Length: 74
Image 1: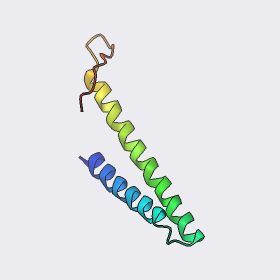
Image 2 (image 1 turned 135 degrees about the vertical axis):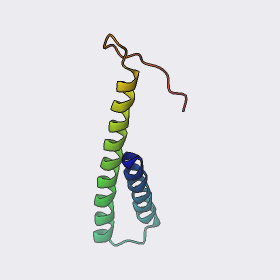
Image 3 (image 1 turned 90 degrees about the horizontal axis):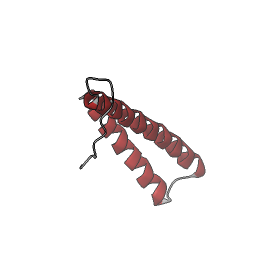
């Protein structure tokens, strides 16, 4: 559950950073700070997604240790 909350918070902050940057109302220094924060949020999202991916792989692992890949119909 914590991964979901962290992901959602990070994604929201990333979306806010994108909106600020797209507005064009920031000074160069402000834009650089917002961009830097956005990169950190994107990295946090990437890490959260990787954790979930590993959990899914573990759940799909068969008794013989082989992974059974199944298409995700999300």
